[in-house]
Structure formats: C-alpha cells, structure tokens
Length: 344
Image (cartoon, rainbow, N blue to C red):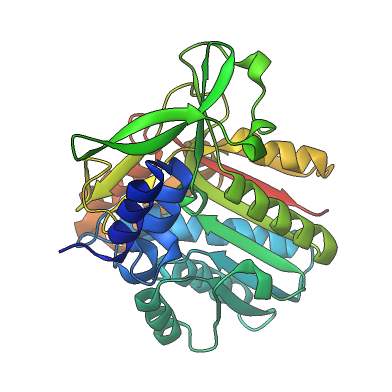
C-alpha cells in the first residue's frame, strides 16, 4: 500500500515527467503529515539509525562540559538552551545533568526544542516538563542563547550539480520502464548562482543545500543580534567531495534510495564550506571546526571514560568499545565534524 509521500512523489513524476532531488527528499522526510521525520520513530537500536548520544553518555557529557566552560568564561547567569532536531532528547538529558552538577542553582536557563516529529514531541514533554517545543526557528526567543544541532543539517534537501559540455545540470528522478531512476536536467535558474561553473571539472558532483544555507544564515543573524553560541555536530566535509554522498538507511542498514519512500532516512554529508562562508561573510572571528575525534579528546573523553570505568568496572569493555566507536579514525572519529562559533 502506497503512503502519502510516495503518492505525492509519483503524481509529480507522472504529471511533469520528473521530480528534482531536493523536492524528492523534502516530501519524503518533512513536508507531509506522514513524511518520515514527522511520523516515524527512526532513532535507536530498534529504529533506523543510532546517533552519537545513543552510543554513549560520554558524548553528551563532553558536550555538556564544553557548554559549561562557555557559560563560565562568559559569566552567564541566564540564557536559553536550544536544540535543533533533538529526537528523543538523549543529548539534552546528558547536557542538563552536567550543567546541574557543575552549577547547582547558580544559573537559570529555559530549554527550547525545534522538533516536528509528534512521537518525539510527546517524549520530550515527558522528559523535560518545562521545555518549549517549536515547529520552526521562527518562533524561537530573542535572547542570549546556546544552540546545539547534532545530526540536524545532514537531513536537509540538497541540490546536486554536474558539469556537462560546459553547462550545469542537476540530479532529478524520473521513471524508466516503470522504475524510478536518477537522471540529469539543466539546473534551475534560481540555483545557478550557487555553483561556480568555472571551478567545475567534468564528472564532478557538487552538493549544496539551499534550505540549510538559508536556515543557518537566519540562525547566525539571530545569534549576532541576541548574543550566544552554536555548536553543530554532523558528518560532513571541508575539502570538496566531488562525488554523490547521498545515502538511505533503514533498520540500521544502507538501502536502495527508492525503496520505502517516506519510510526510511535519506541523508547526505554536510558541506561545511558553505556554513563557514556564511560565518566569514558575517565577520564572525570566534569560530573553530575540527573532527569529532579531536573535539572529544581535547575536551576530556578519555579521562571521563576512566572515571566511568572506575565506577562501573564490570562495564569496562563496553565503555571502551563505545569510546572507540566515537573517536577512532576508521569509525566516527574523522567523518564527523564539530563546528562551533559565538557572537563574541
């Protein structure tokens, strides 16, 4: 039985002959009531994928310690703590535990979430009784804020550009003998300016997300206006990939991109260059990007692991395996990046 997103996508293809890649992703994941991120339950061992906070409490604790240091250095007594796409709230739970241990009642912060999934919304209200949930960034408060975004930007729709015979084309999806396939079409006029044709080489693929760029710039403006800090944790790259990074995941396994439309996760690696360009344009000097491995080690994950092992000796192997998964070069260590910046 076809569900709402698949019906919508197929109807567009039947009517127009094709659908743009970013449209396909947006309808599959976000746009409709039964789109994946609105109605599914994707996180965890029984879901479709596991994020770093679900792997080990140490991940959230290190992020919490980083935030605590920022609060201390800037002598903050009151602020908003905002997470974009919190899912089950596992990361925030670990952050709050660290802040409560360090500061007791010395600081006050309100917790805000931007979350469109109804299942997750109910879960968050149970875990954080006083939290405020937003469907978009438009309703976020105009106050000094600390923003956290873990595996948030990788789910935004992307435009894939290709250079053929000195012209720009983009990835579309069409039908061939009744089956969905990838194809190319001359790029839409409104997206031409995003890509520099002269810097393209043949057979190169460059991915950018107009939606992510727009949102990120709005968040940067908000932080500049109201003061604050943001930390983004996601898998992505700084040097150009030049190949497609699209992938689809269901039941913690890679799948065919056209299977289970609206019922599986569609992601791509984050083009951090585009985010850094916006920070440069806004003349933000206080910024740093590094690998997940470097961030976690420099902020004390190995020391925290030793402390945790001393308290839970029977879980030593489990804890060490979790840390290995987070920081090893052949696992999440270098593919995942941490981008931090602040208004001051």
